[in-house]
Length: 123
Image (cartoon, rainbow, N blue to C red):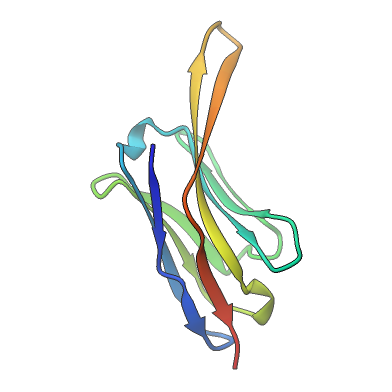
């Protein structure tokens, strides 16, 4: 799986951006997709994840402002970011995880990362 992120840029506080992550393969086969971010000098953190056939999860800091979604027809993952704050400034990375079950309960998990796209929130 190859992932190509795009959509970053410079936006004023309170503004909006939509990030896109294009997958080389069908996203219907990808078990987990998500967005992580890393600010300068800080560790990478989860922003939002979407589990196929399951739930979405958001970091507390973005709940109510960010929305993750998949478009199967376009094999693309999105992150709609509204009410942006300066503390949202970071490199944003898209992520995919494929599961391969080798027993009823056990599975291998394969992680894939796209390149970062920079989001800068500044007046």
